[in-house]
Length: 518
Image (cartoon, rainbow, N blue to C red; front, side, top):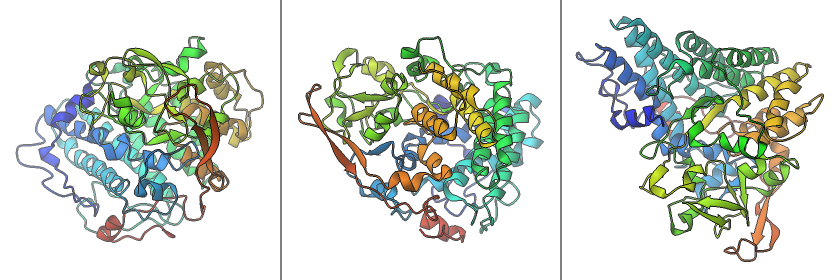
């Protein structure tokens, strides 16, 4: 199994472009270069490795951005925690420890990308290496700005644009509209797509790096967000989805006509780089993403240190169509049979707020602990990559783009439905598309909250309480239950809460305005 980035990150200090932990004013800190660096091919590759350091950061794709995903109606916060509750209740101010570092960390990625873009072009190294490293830098800059724009920018103000040309300045302005950010993201990702190879050309030691399909995929995702302000961008979404499909890398769903297994197998370690792979958080049992353990039973039945933070709601459970094989692959409910650390058992939980647990990322927990899990329960990574974009998203983004343009979007939706064991539909509407995205991507960084926000559905969804099952005996898998409210209705103001608050320290240090209403 590939360990490329996770192992490379063990030595990521990047002395040639060190980042201060106080990088909150968007200005590069520390020594950007020295006389002995930016000389060799190894220097350039080492610098590019540093673009992925956030894969090992709990506050990023370990669980950090999941606090924003957790605002959706698919899950509730599984443990008492004032900061995360404030985020979910839209009463946060951005100082909360759960979310106050992600904004600056994305700018750290941007800083590293800017340094590479400024230094690598003049290096006397192999042209193929130079193009790939620059492609990775443009990709990661566009990727970082995508998340920043999605979470913090809107029609009232974008987020500061820092490039290799102005990265030494000390104060920045917010663009007047997030369109300016989206235009920059598109330009960066197009450069990346022209420079990056297909993932199928990578050797095993390079799997996990940015690739051409990933650039096209984030171009599609950026234009989905852009279409909120300009409906003409739906045509661009479809175009970039087609570029993934037709890139020559053989992207396709894992579909062997075995619905009971096919969807579940997308999240198996053996399929970290399957035909469905576009871009993921690279992980292993030494370094990587802790998300699978974050979703595992709190204290792990005394066997392993699960954190139990996010629990599926009864609303998510009930949203699946009858016969949808994704339901059992996504959610564990009381009395389900599953394998834990080599032993078959029936599911129960003393800790779940809803009576359910996410199952998608449980494969590393099937085996003896030493095989695929970090022995350090305080940093419980695994050998399973956590997907950020997979091919099903490409299919459903194209279907949405077609429907939004008055065209027929059945083809992509039905490929996804067929894999789930569901009958094809004819004349798919946005109602069908929305349901399909919810069923396909529950518990993933594809982010239902962001979907609900851009669809204009968040206010109505969050005006309803979240419910779950309260079992009479929480240690008895066959226990009876009653339905209870586990999280009250929330006050979501679409004029304010469609973006998140920028951490106040970053607002102050950069001399920018906070998002209105927060």
